[in-house]
Structures are given as structure tokens and as C-alpha cells.
Image 1 (cartoon, rainbow, N blue to C red):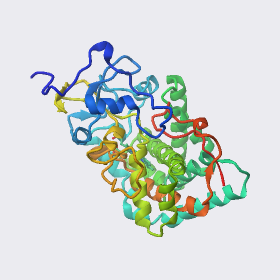
Image 2: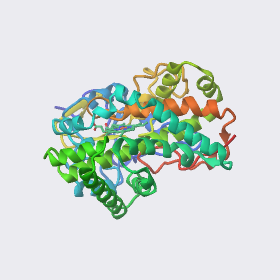
Image 3: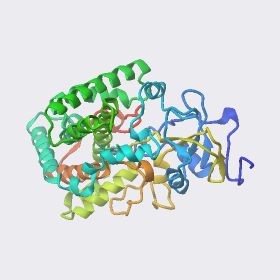
Image 4: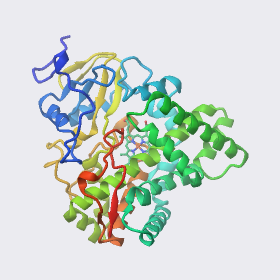
Length: 414
Ligand code: HEM
């Protein structure tokens, strides 16, 4: 079989292979990197170069992305040769610790994922709405009673999802400084292997202690359930701690970034903010959340896979052993699916976005993330109608170095 099936498919000559990840334009902090959008229109399946010199395929078109997400000939196992690691620290972490189900293939992935799906069903999450609303109002009350300007990341964006996932898991929120600081290391692309290993080790020890405590004193929470499964022999202690780690980390890092970056995007688009602030219709807010998820696509480093067999995408053969990167942002900014994709339009139907991935590994926590975002966007601007940035846009520190995009700080006043 020839490597290139159609003239449109593309493999750059070795020294022309662009580096990945690619920088965003300084004057356009919400848009995907221009070079990535250029590849999307000119060479939708093309080689990119990673930190270690490897050259996996970057698959940028919506249709190809959706097809590959459901293709079992691609693996998420980071221990396989050819897997495109985000950094040396990620590679090291996976070599030392057997992965959690985010990095397992079916059927093992499905077996473990099933153990933790129940609390994330739409019905169970919807039942949490009054609690999450109360938590949100409490954080906003505290913010309004304190000095201004205030950092919205510290005041609301980080503590809310952190408190919610703590309640679900049964982890004491009083320990949040400990696990937030260690989780931050885990999502930094520039963390050294030693830093990452130390942070992960501390978190796993902490979660193992929590699981042992739940064995002695079970409660109505997810860690107690996982602890019970270790006793029943369904999970090892290490597997249970890894699951706790996955849920604790993904439960607050991603949503926190969507809250802070989303608030900033609304402040930069006052007409769109007004729609969300002035409506009484929860469906309008729910639609705005989908559009914001599409527009920002905060998991911005691409979903990583390695081919187990030869696979064709966009007219290009991806060989067994080749790495594959699927950046959600380019599909979510494809004009054929989302007209005028660079326009934030909260009234559009953005429900087919891929900000939560698609198919096998589609985000487990998406009902919870949606609930939190609907409550925050639907409450904050109504309660604080004069909310505004308290620093120039070019002084806001963006998380270009993280696997999840966002802002480190968002100074606001009212
Ligand atoms: C706005 C917030 C969130 C975004 C943008 C997001 C995004 C994603 C994406 C893109 C994936 C797919 C990864 C892949 O295909 O390789 C994923 C998977 C996952 N997410 Fe989320 N996520 C969010 C919130 C959450 C929350 C609140 C939780 C709750 C604990 C969570 C738990 C997970 C888990 C466990 C997986 C792995 C699913 C699997 O492999 O079967 N996420 N998420």
C-alpha cells in the first residue's frame, strides 16, 4: 500500500516538520494557534515534532478526528513504543505507575470505568444542583464581602470544582492546599520527571491513607465505594488510589480553567455576557456553556494515541507504531461544522463540539462540568453585573505551558 492515498495528504520533509505544541497569537488568546489552523486547512494530517524529536501525526479535521476517536486500532496505552508523550515527566510517570482507565484500552478500560460511572449520570448530577448552587453563592458572598480587586481563580474558579469533587469522593476539603498544589505539578508540561514523580507519589500516599480510613469508617462517597472494591478483590490498593487520583485531578483542574477563562471570554464579549446575564431561560445558559466549551477547548494539547495497526485518516496511511495527536480545537473551529468559528456566539447550536473528546474515552465528568459551568455563568454575572477585569488583557498570565489551557490569575473588580 502506498503511504499517501490522495494528493491532499501530506508528509513534510524532515526539517520542515513543525514543532508541537504551537504558540498562540499574543493578541488572540482564545483562538487556537495560527500554525495549527494553517495545517488544518492545508495539510489536515501531517507530521509534527515533539520535545523528544519524535514526529507523530497531527490529525486536525473534524471528520477524521471523530473517526479516529472510535477506532480500536488506536491505543491510549502510554507504555507502548511510539506513544506521543506530552513531556519527559509524563513519560516517566507512566513508566513508573500502571495507568488509570484514561490510559487503558477496552475491555480493561470499560471494566474499570464502569466502577465509577454511577455518580456521574445526568440524574445523579442534576440532584446536586441545589448543593452546587449554594456553594457557588457562598463563594460569591465571601468574594463580595472581601477587598477588591480579587483574583477570581482563587475566589471562585478553583475552590468551587475542588469542593464539589471533594464531596463526591469523600476527601476532606481542608486538605485542598495540599492536593491543589500537587495536582498543578501534574498538569504542567515543563515539570521535571523528579518534580512530577514526587508530587504524584505524595498524592498516591495521601489517597491510599484516605482509602484505608474509609475501610474502617465507610461513608456515602466514592472513596468508600472504591475501598470496598479493594476488600472484595475487584481492585488493588494501587488501582484504587490511581482512580482517586484521576478523579480528584480531572475533577477540578479542567473545570477551574473553564470557569476562569470562560469568565474572561465573557468579559471580552459584553454582548454575549448580556445574553447570559439577562435570561430567565436555563436552556439559554446551557447553550452558552456548550458554545464556551467549543470556543475555548481548554484541553488544548491534543488527545494522544498510538496506532496498533495501519489506519487511514484523511487520505494518509498512519502506520502501526506511529503516534497520533488529535487536537480538539481545530475540529471545534472548523467552519463547515461551526460557521464563523472564531465568533463567540452563545445562541448557536454547538452541541456537537469535541471539547470532552468523543466515543470510547469521552469525558466521564461532563455532566458535572456542565452543571458547574451553568451555575457559575448563570449566577456570577447576574449577582455582580458590574464585574470587570482589573488588569490589562496583556498582563493576564495565560497557561500556555499546561496541558489544560486557562489563566493563572484573573484580577477582577466591580
Ligand atoms: C470543563 C471541564 C472538563 C473538560 C473540558 C474535560 C475534558 C476531557 C477530555 C477531552 C477527555 C478525553 C480524553 C481522551 O480522549 O484522551 C476527558 C476524559 C475524562 N474526564 Fe474530563 N473534562 C472536564 C471535566 C471533568 C470532570 C469534572 C471530571 C470528574 C471527575 C472528569 C473526568 C474525566 C475522566 C475520568 C476521563 C477519562 C474517561 C475515559 O478514559 O473513559 N472530567 N475529559
